[in-house]
Amino acid sequence: MSPRPSTPAKVYASEGAIVVHYDLDVAQARLSRRSAVSLPATVQAGWAHPGLPRLYIASSNATPFAAAPRDEHFLTALQADSSGKLSQIGESVRLGSRPVHMCLDRRGRHALVAYNDPANLTVHPIADDGSVGGALEQPAIALRKYPHQIKVSPADDLVVVCARGNDPTPTAPEDPGALHPFSYRDGRIREALPLTAPNGGFGFGPRNLDFHPTLPVAYVALERQNEVQAFGYGEHGFDPLPLSRATTLFGAQPVAKPMAGMVRAHPNGRFLYVANRTMGAITEDGRSNLALGGDDIAVFAIDPSGGQLTPLQRIDSEGVMPRTFGFDPSGRLLVVANHVPVTAWDGGEPRHVPQSLMLYRIGDDGRLTRARKYALSDAHASMFWTDVVGVGEAA
Image (cartoon, rainbow, N blue to C red; front, side):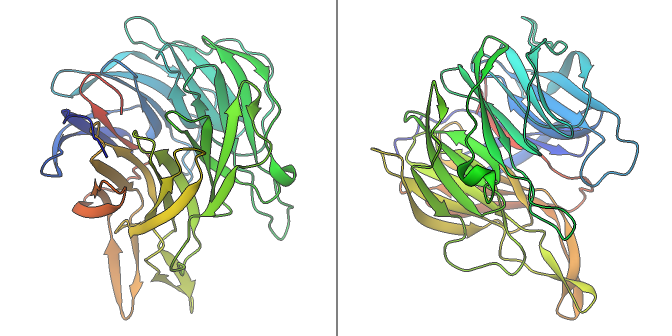
């Protein structure tokens, strides 16, 4: 795998409205909880600065599980000291609606935020001291229903929003999905490029995207179709049709309804990792019964010439809804957050499956082996976000 030399690393994971800081011992695959900082509302997403020990966190009380009120939404800058402990930089910026995802541009000069209701995006300047400012004026932006991610290309000249769409219901037709690319320069959305929506976006539900570190290829996880598709991209945006496509459910099929989630390419560009998620239970005979086995990480090998995918492995997350995950800076460990606790019937007895952080070793062949599990039995709030950050650099 030719990993980078071992680098001191921190894991940051949300628990409701706090961000918890862990030290990560890569050699021992061990986490040590060190400190926590409170945010003004439940953490929705976060992003590490590309070169400085800073985090940017989007938070809201309008989570999928929250009751009213739903009118508190924020963007907050945090500074990490030499130990990794976080403190807030300046005031939190108020946002107009729930921020479903966020990122920074490649130079760390702007924070970009995506919203699902109403579908929108905003761009915020980052000052020299790390503080974040109000939204910059942008041209009118039209997005399809349910944006779920925003990301900037490696060249810092393209912004893409994954609009997932929605499955049809007995009372409503399908909302088609799309990739919405925009040309971008230094905080300015310059032009809407042609959207990518095979078959008009019907049967196309992109939730999450990652760019290959060297090839002009982006990998898109389709939540509603349980697929990952590879698209070429460039100044034109994204190609209209995928270069290749692969199911994330190769092998055994889960009992509960699966949904593809986060997708990330390994820093060496040789492997791809995609989360499969279920709610961990199904209703049978009027009661909730555990249905474990569909929450896992799917691993693919990447063809170095064209970016095509070959399935390698699916490995159990040992929890429910692995929403986010990250690589340590040396590329030797994967840290996965199972963000939903579940209590349901398991045979004749109720069983509790807590939230957890799972650590896996990454082999030279890209395959994962279980290293250690941290069950968060006292956690009562969703872990919407986690990542691994090197000291003085972003993961």
